Amino acid sequence: MATASVVNRREFLKTGAAGGAALVIGFHLSPDAFAGQAEDQEKKTPNPFDAWVRITPDNRVTLVLGKSEMGQGVYTSLPMILAEELCVDWKQVHVEQAPTNPKVYDLGTGGSGSVAGSWLPLRRAGAAAREMLIAAAAKKWEVSTDTCKAKDGYVVHGHPERSFRFGELIVDAAKLPVPNLNTVPLKNSNDFTVVGHDTHRFESRAKVTGAAKFGIDSRPPGLLVAVVARCPVFGGTLVSFDAAKAKAVPGVRDVISFETKGRGASTTGGVAVVADNSWAAMQGRKALEVKWDEGPAVKESSEELHKQFLANAAKGGNVLRNEGDADSALASAGAKKVEATYEFPFAAHACMEPMNCTVQIRPDGAEAWIPTQAPQWAQAVIAEAAKLPPEKVIVNTTLMGGGFGRRYQADFVMEAAQVAAKSPGKPVMVLWTREDDMQHGFYRPASYHKMQGAVDANGNLAAWKHFQTSTSIAAKWSQKGMDDPGLGEFGSGATIP
Image (cartoon, rainbow, N blue to C red; front, side, top):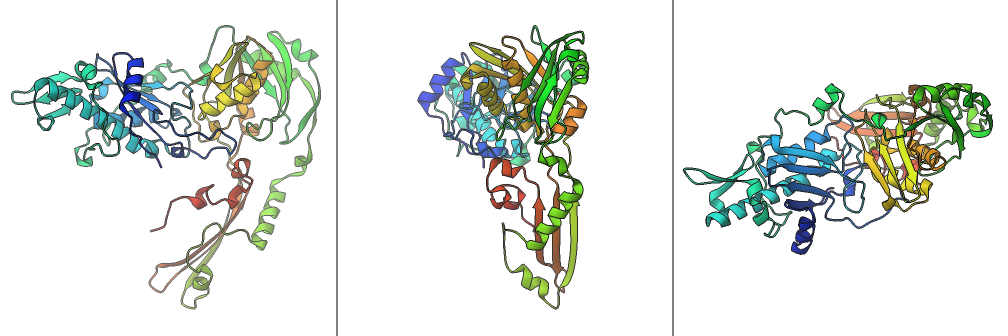
């Protein structure tokens, strides 16, 4: 659940001064608002300044946003929430992508939680700024705040109406105490003029004109492009390779092998062909001669997985959620019973923009351009590969052509960091082809479901019993896997009415 923290006066004045002539409101977005984190990620005390609202003298309102835009619309939906409570002209609102500083900003986008997790914090932040601006105007006019209201980026009062632009009030408003964000008055939903109404998307013009910059569009000076030869079987390892023919391809600069990374970034390792452009890199990969140890997973198949599912279903499993006595209800003579089994295959995310990551590593720091849902994790991964402290790694989070949770993983980031570490000083983009994306991605787990249900004589649901066995992404984060009811949808708050 998202929480809002009260900003004390000392902290507010300190950070407001650092921002120059602007009214700055800090608010906290809980890490619980996005997808579950790895157990070995940094545990930290939430900082109250996880996101920022800035109002400048030209009446420009900026939301510095830690969430990643991948087509789901957070660059528009979250500012709409803010603008609603602030009572600002929508045309005055702008968005900036937050720098990757996990101690300050709420980073990570997943679990379909951006709007739900930001709803109250953003409303409260907008309302706090509104009340401070009203108070500043009322003080100038020497009237009660009850006789003033905020409207379209102005504070207005009286008949005939007089007004101040928000930008004219920021210096005085910044001297006032920040309202308690937990008790600041919020608008009635019946009075909403922004939320629930049609508006333009912030990035739409840039997208349709081709001006929008996605990760794949990153072009730092001197960019090299690499594609990676990976073992065709999961868990396989590199035995040897001959780079002679690959290096003979015009434009190929180098051929680099790198190791497998285990729990965490979970890369498969492989051989990277580094070239002046993507075409040369792909042609160089085709010319590579590589020998793989395909490992024990070469024997795996859909048929074998299906057999494992049936065996698991026959022996049962651990109970994750139990309410009432489903077995007794199913055994009731008057109950109408239904049984069914469902089986789901693995499914690739198939993002429109294939995985890519551009990294440049220097002795004094590193910089990266990444379409990522988890910039804080990407920063940590690059820091590990570059042997640098995380604060020395700048991550520029770009727009992305779809995410769907796939870009929450850091395997493609680690690959780029590993290759860049062996190409010091040079920016290198590791680019996955569409075929790479389909063959080597993280998939929706395959699963098998056995369901039993019953309704009573009145047609009301009397029992529902659901057994599931599946491969598990959760097991990557927790040794308990799905035995932990806090992981996965079994432990969610969803209920059946």
